[in-house]
Length: 106
Image (cartoon, rainbow, N blue to C red):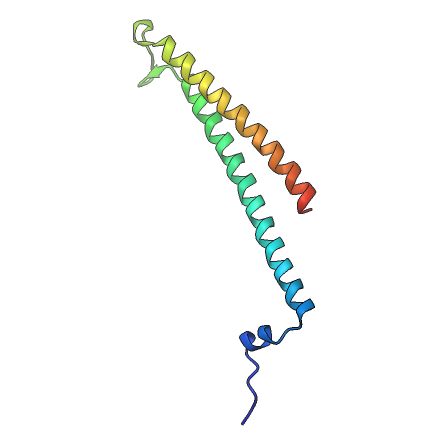
């Protein structure tokens, strides 16, 4: 009867050094992918917020400029500042994530 040499059996038969190297590689790859994905998600978040902030400046109502009486300056300023702070926070997190990625992964 022929001896089986499937992947599972091969993995079980690895010596400790090879097994440790395989685990280290898997952990490193997983961490690298997570960092890259996180950085991309933050960048997308910044772009989305920037578009939202730009949309605040669209004061037209079906192609016509909104009436001054319909414009709520308090809501506009509050929302604009809130978005600006969210963008600033994400830029800070993005900078730190990139620094840590460069230090730990690159």
